[in-house]
Length: 494
Ligand code: IMP
Image (tube, rainbow, N blue to C red; front, side, top):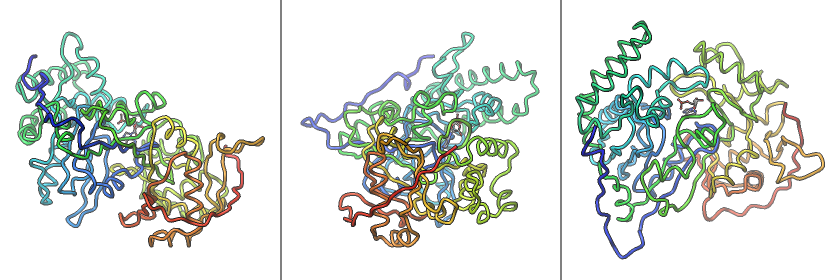
């Protein structure tokens, strides 16, 4: 299939005297996803002109409460509620057109119009119905989100199966919609036939294809066929913030196979999937969470309760039990005082709301892993880190730990008896409350110094509550605080 939109078109970027005025920063999650990246983007958005996605698709997501109601965004870049910001979805994304059209429509109903603001690269891969069906069928082994992301990227690399083209980009739909939809239907029909026509999803997937032309009518005005659109904007002076979906530890190559997502989540990929030259890179921003979580399967060294927790969460997801069940059957205050890390983890999940945004499935909970963060910061050149949910560490003070347990790196504390886990006793409820009011006392300052020393990067902000105003920004004029000599205790983490 040849096409006009799919053949790369380049506009001529302005050839002003040389140096570009704009630049790009890349913001990524440093752990296993769900670190609260959208909240940080909300804080930073005023300083950028374009917010751009470069990987993933409807497997990402965050819920935003607005005065007009709650909206779950999956594919649109964060920053939709900052009207000055243009939004870009790069060629590295796996696009679900039905869900994207739905997001755009929901926003329109809230009075947020994306006309002229949203630009989607014509070369983004399209998630097809057979991708979704395949992913749902095989999702249990890895614990995928079932959005067809893996099969979509796999088909992009495969290109042709049994002499039939299996990957399609938005530009294919733009150039020859009838032929492209027919080709998608042939692949779906082949799959239905090989399943004996009995799969429960047949009607749902066929319906998606029937609706695709109407969906494309809504998306077409946003599709950007100019390969150098973002370059042009940067040359005009735009400041770009790339927003990573999922997180560094879930990268398809850098993560632990097979318990990863299927796209590249590392910051360097922003410039491939985001359609911009890396020469415009300014800095790399990381987001981490003080109460760590992971959904799906795979290693999680600081998991509270280890294997038991992983198994419990897996079974809960399979049985569709989650937040309501746990709150009905368990008392978080009792669990918190237990000596069993599994129970402390469950208490933290309940007290800090660590459940899947859409599914309500319990997330696996872990202590803050400074050793892991240190490796990630080093490997990806992270310049500054935002640490969310620091206020939630106060729960540990009520637990049998009587301090904040953290995994630490052996490089930082070389000794004969090298501990894996330290209990940091110096944080107080008072200092956290004080921090929420915008002040940094010696106890909180000491904690920040400790974390910075252990991860090898400076903290740009710490989250002390769910609201945007509870982010204590430490950028630039970091208040000087008297140093707080804290001697951590050593424990073993089984
Ligand atoms: P997939 O991305 O749907 O293929 O899922 C692969 C793995 O990545 C599974 O363990 C998912 O739970 C995980 N994953 C995908 N997206 C997210 C996310 O936004 N947050 C956290 N985990 C995710």
